[in-house]
Length: 143
Image 1 (cartoon, rainbow, N blue to C red):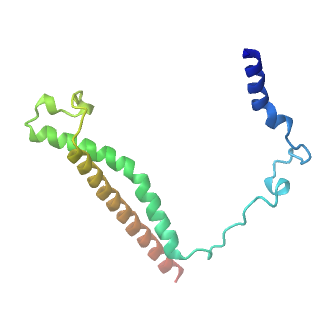
Image 2 (image 1 turned 90 degrees about the vertical axis):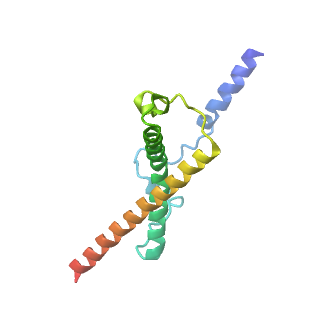
Image 3 (image 1 turned 120 degrees about the vertical axis):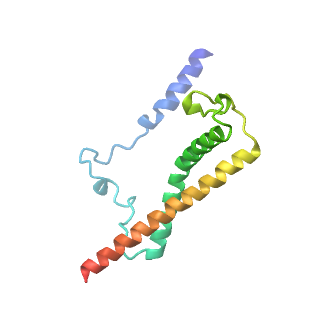
């Protein structure tokens, strides 16, 4: 039985190699020559409106900054709690060797999540403002 299962696993793993199509040349390394019908067309610069590109960038910046915002928000709130309790070692943050508290209430979790969302929103707004300033400078230089 074990030999039979071993044989089935081997056939499953190596079946793509057995049935692969070797009719196409693969030594050129040029994907356009190998599979011209599978590659998408290049985007035109005017294919998407300017506002759609800005919204896409904003969503990427927002979702990308959220994990860091959660980390730094939690760290900041840990230091805040530590300071509020007169620097009692029981409330010291994990980064300082404390952190015996591992369970957090729903209120604390909501507080961290909402503050992190706000921080990510601020980061996104700052990025948007910086990009607008850069675009305005480019337009002035063209004129």
